[in-house]
Length: 247
Image (cartoon, rainbow, N blue to C red; front, side, top):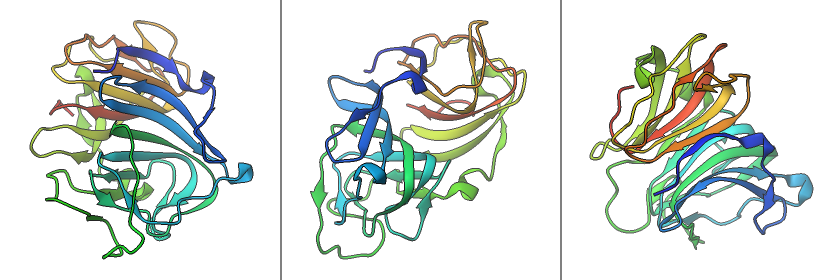
């Protein structure tokens, strides 16, 4: 399991080159045993970045939410800020990848990422390359769709609004956008599953601390008490959870 991480200030981390020209990463958390990780990635065409030109799949899930810029896996649906993409394991994608400008996105995977290239895909849209389709199917929610459908929520015991993005119907593991109103405060409590939080907009204070606007990151392993979190001016969060929680 990944370690407990509280209020990691994302924009203070160094960008680390990943190998291909123009591709950089800020690693936020990683499970040393499984290779599961969350990272903020940056693609910079001015530094030589070019997207993969061949469709491919991974043997782990790949989950993405756009933070800045504009890029695509198929040149039809474009990943912009708050666009959400979920590729289950063995989902063929990248049919016509393209990038319009420097882009950043939050990337989650369930193990070390492998690349299996498919030079002649049998379909032109997302499909499972081998085996049975997983219960949590593929999802592509462009910005307007991802930001539509918020419903009243009680995130960490405080009144909020949530928009579920993708949930496994068997385990309850999933992802959501959560909108916190000004003056929101959660209750410090342990959860039976992991909880991961990335602040997209606004800011969160921890145990009475500063809630100035900034991108920050949290990871709580199962059973770890969540700090008393609060916001003064409101915030938009990207939240991942390991089982069904109250949203």
